[in-house]
Image 1 (cartoon, rainbow, N blue to C red):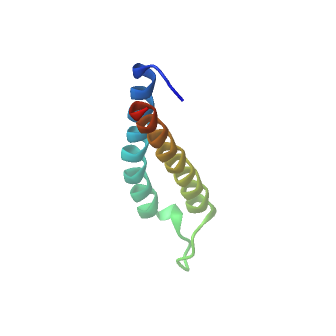
Image 2: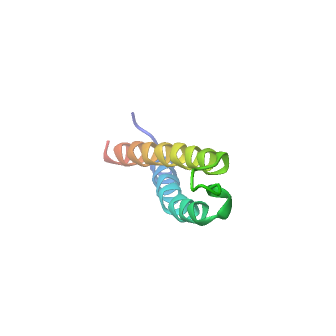
Image 3: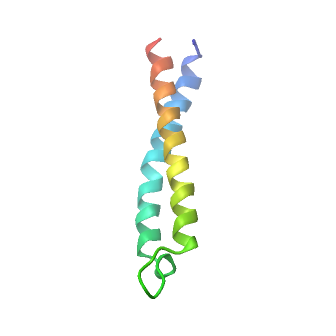
Length: 73
């Protein structure tokens, strides 16, 4: 699939942004006292944030790959 150069660059930048921004947020969530209950088990707070971050990172990686592939085409 051929895209204009500017759109390919937007996809690459968007993918990189996602992969750079979310990991530090995940580290903060893991350190948050609301992430574990008094027995050390994960709470809903941790599970929901983990799923949101994981989904965002997967979509970011896919966006990056698509951007790189359109640049290479």
